[in-house]
Image (tube, rainbow, N blue to C red; front, side, top):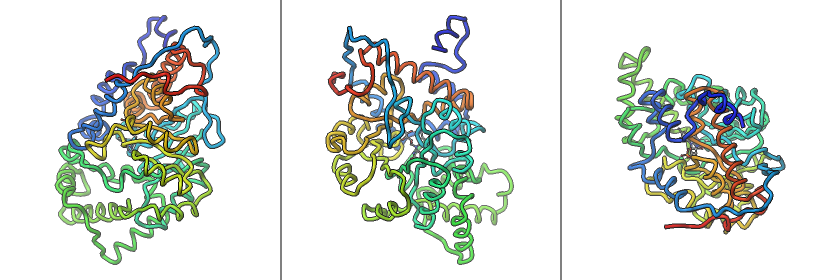
Length: 409
Ligand code: FNR
């Protein structure tokens, strides 16, 4: 309602309403490197484009004369009723968008009562983000060191996080030409490392590696980007010795950050670490969904990481129906990758997602206006979602199914 009343008062909205205008304004403000990091996808960015194209192939078939005067947009997830069917997706290194970073975004989420999913690569520690209040989930990059994985999960549980989201699709960072071209690695200078640098296990571990002079292997493909980045680096990295130390630090971090050898057999370890619900993010294949159910996970997130990992991967929306069918309502299936409007949310929910995660659009709001910008994005998505529901003859999500949609093309 706020957007209409301010419109009547002749005031322009604080941030662009149309998603493409919002993105363009945000990227312009962020500068080349940060913009490339947020906007970029893997390879030729075909999966990123496919994510949006997939939404265009589903059209809504509105129903009439159904008394939609009272609407309920709430959904239940893990025993909590959320006022809206969406969460803010885990996004690393938010300080690149705005100095308020995770705190600004988490405050906006808390104001709306929707969960903020704190990234392992957050710019503020998970405890600082918890201090904002509001519902919160923690996204885990499963470290090569079990003790660090355990530490992250236990810290999250102690700080009042309500679910653990294990991201499966990023055991290594995808081939992202925009980042390679700008020589950009976000975690340098401690950016996006707040959870690691505040972790007692990680601090001890780094010390141990240094003492042993360990040199974990690094993919050679990443080296030119690192060197290019270091070239632009200000003090204190001018001397060759400093560069050497920086590269050693990056190597050390990359070796610890993920476990490429992670397998289904490791899930019981995580189960033993926490009583919180465990969701797997990055599920696209129905066979993986079936295996996840057999392993007793509590929820799935169908996602291709916004097209940032496997160029040519199936559009996430195209993967959703088969996963939903396979899961058969046993656990909630959530969805992200390509949501750019309230109408997109309706489509994903009609195809069986219990809730969706909003990704890049909230980063754009953050870039333009900090917390207020994210609030505006949440309000605009909620308003459009509500209107689309009403105008489609839908009072709530209880009886919504794919019958609301028609597939074209
Ligand atoms: C991400 N995503 C992500 N996912 C995750 O599990 N941990 C992370 O740290 C990040 N970091 C991250 C940074 C940036 C800049 C982007 C754009 C995305 C993926 C994110 O959670 C979500 O899956 C995608 O953003 C969904 O795609 P769209 O809708 O944003 O295009």
